[in-house]
Image 1 (cartoon, rainbow, N blue to C red):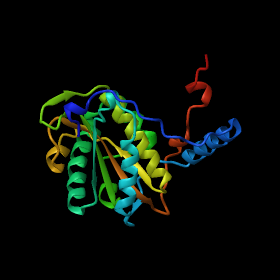
Image 2: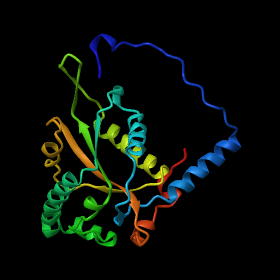
Image 3: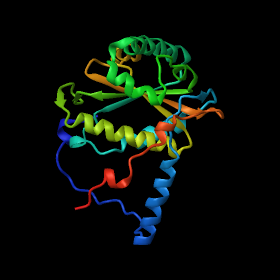
Image 4: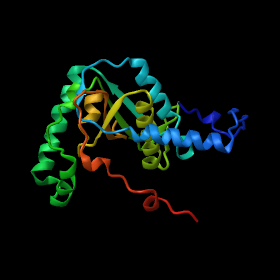
Length: 229
């Protein structure tokens, strides 16, 4: 994407947005909060198709996130091929079985009990889309030479948040899934070794009988997560 000769500073005019009054901003902020309050991670999907264009728009939103030096150190692989999804499920479940057999450690496994998770991951087959998010340890110039990426973890985390929000805004549900390790995804999805898979998002429509763990409804109050100085 980057060419050496184009990497110099040049200013462009900021795109204009409509100016809002304080009251309008407060209403907009509250409305967005109320929308995001309805977001829940679900594990019960149906196989109703989701048009590719919706996924593309949501990933475009993720790609608009800020990043260290604007290097955009991420890559998204969106999978709807049933055979590939099933291979991901089998590999992920193999890792999860080792985790729940004790590999994760007693404290970690105990912490997951209120969430009700286990090694069985049928959503990886049922959800119409899986989106695998990769972090790029370094970038590559158009001439093939490498350049260092900065704040990779932070940048990819922000982009992932953008993506989850965009999917919810589009009326979809998602599940964040992080089998450990995830090295099996690189050869399966044809991604280079300098990319590290950080998350699998299962994406689609929730079953009418979908449930969420009651523990997941407990959120820290504002006075625990905010300090005003």
